[in-house]
Amino acid sequence: MKIHVVSFQVPYPADYGGAIDVFYKLKALREKGYEVILHTYVYGDRHEEPVLEELCNEVHYYRRKTGCCKQLSTLPYIVITRDNKQLLKDLCKDDAPIVFEGLHTCYYLDHPALAHRKKIVRMHNVEHRYYWRLAQQSGWNWRTIYYAIESWRLRCFEHQLQHADLICAITKADMQALDHIVPGKKIIHLPVFFDAEFPADTMPTEPFVLYHGNLAVEENQQAAEFIFRHITPRCPDVKFVVAGRNPKFKNVPNNVQIIDSPSDEQLDQLLRTARIHLMLTFQPTGIKLKLLNTLVRGNGHIIANHDMLYGHSLGRFCTRADKAEDIVEAIYNLISTDLPAKELERRQAYLFKIKKAGISRLSLFQIGISF
Image (cartoon, helix red, strand yellow):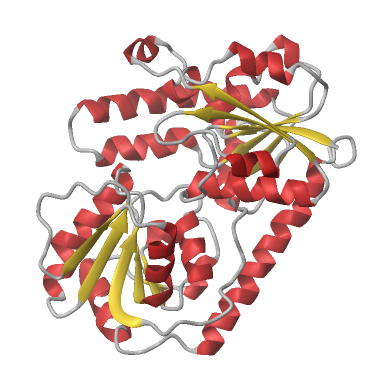
């Protein structure tokens, strides 16, 4: 069966949340026997990728049209900048179902030319909530204004979801929220897709605390700065490693090592050898793919706050701590002991169950059978 997938960005390398879900969903679709036609946007540091050509039957690339003039639209910036007439032409070449990855890609969801097509929207977040939280957390500057306006525009645009035949939420909490936004619409929980290939060997951990993420993203910058201000000064004898793309920190504590844009091999080594993984966020939206990735690749303890654990069941494998003093206490309780082998086995069994559930629910894409 043929299926179109419209991705908000080139989903490779699969090194952050949305890209991980899209990339491994493409692999799952291919393994299920689908003829996959991928449509994706090139911008930033993402370019055409031969890996995708091997994974999909066809790959079409489009330029994202960014710029200040796009801010004048009443449509969300993340949507209007992905308006591309060639995409519509390519989608209209056949009658196959279409998967729109994120609200970002839904510019043509209500287009008359697609009125009789089966359309599925994969929601990675309740986007207007995500942007409103960014506005609340960014202080008072031009970004605050942008995030607040974008949140309002996204809230208005979400009614376009009524034109979808099926909405796939990434968490059960998001599914409930979307049910209020588009009541009566068919909405399912489609678990996240990720790499569940566990390392063949178990590396010994070392006594350091790891925080990792795309440090160019404001959400991750804020978490790292929280660690610098409130955690590291209280743990002067503990080594911290902060790794990620494009770090821009002015003051770094003496017991913190910054690793700028680690390679895949470097990051994998860090994940596998860290005694403690510090997983903090102040955005209780979607599901944090780096938490899943850490559970798969890591051998150490995980300390996570409430917002990191919101809306899913992975907290059973983490030590929850929200206040700085509780995080510090947890670090000192865990830094001297390895994670028991039985706990690693329990993690792996549960994560394999999640992956299997996601792949099995792809049967819902069998248009005409499931909905």
